Figure: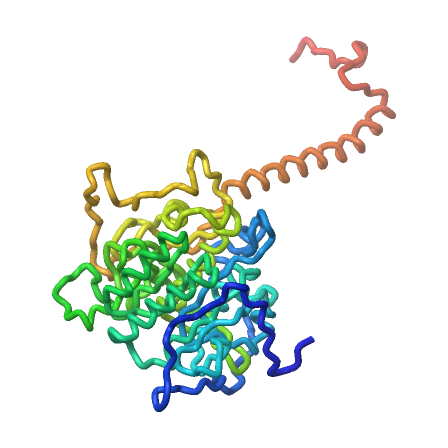
Length: 432
């Protein structure tokens, strides 16, 4: 068993190679694990229940159905703390640290990346927490130090990290960073999609309309989420309300838990009430990993996006620029029959009609967005049938037990089922 502070790294793939430039000289930002012990887990994870993780994990937990190998999720963030073996076990692969050449991505001096990775693929902590794909492996990639913001240089850095993630076997890439648009970033996204890698990204937390074209380029920080090939994720809270800081627009695909969630802290313990689309995105990335694991590495990113949208919970007003196609439903994505769907085909975006245009997206003020039904159960119909069957069985058993008591007593009195003695029939009196 690993002692405190021991880092267990999974075997690096034989073809592992990173080409993203690392900082040198005064630009190096040494990574030291964010210190301080936070709180223990004290309550059941609401987000896991909301998206149906228990049902989904009965189907798949993050390993390929055909080979048993783990799916690989790349986390481009602030690093992932590999010493949190209680959360990740030995499933942290060798990654890349742009700011500290002595590290390999397995250090988080902030907290953000560790939380994001745990949501996507953290180990079960009883009923109190479990990642969406708890058997998947993680490539940690440290692209920022703390909350230093984003610029064009950061966009180009992330573009290179996307290429590295693809080269090192990632099936899914999560990017919980909101960046300005650059040609290298867009090109890297297209290369990843062509390589059959799913990219999931947070839309950002500025309540910005991503469809507007009058923002200065350096202020339009909602990429890569706003590229049509990327699964763009907004957030909602435990009560089912839309997270009001979510950047929104026609390219917003889904919303997921991201307001008031719990995450592990690099130095130990857990922090609660964390909010932002950053923490909604990895729920969807984990769901994408489960779909890859269940149906095969070669299923297309466009089908994964289609599947997640098709099986989402569709609240009033969806599709819309605030909710996308609706609320992530991992149980539905894993358990709904495929029908005639071909997961290996290229799927058009659901808002594109045959003429190539787009359907008009319903728009409303954010204050009028209907809350999601928090009592939604993705297996409600099946459970109703099951409980009806149980109820019927209990009724039958009760009837049998009652008859076992009544019939013998009746026989003692000369009664037989289906008979009646003629001389014991009541006589109708003339006065009646």
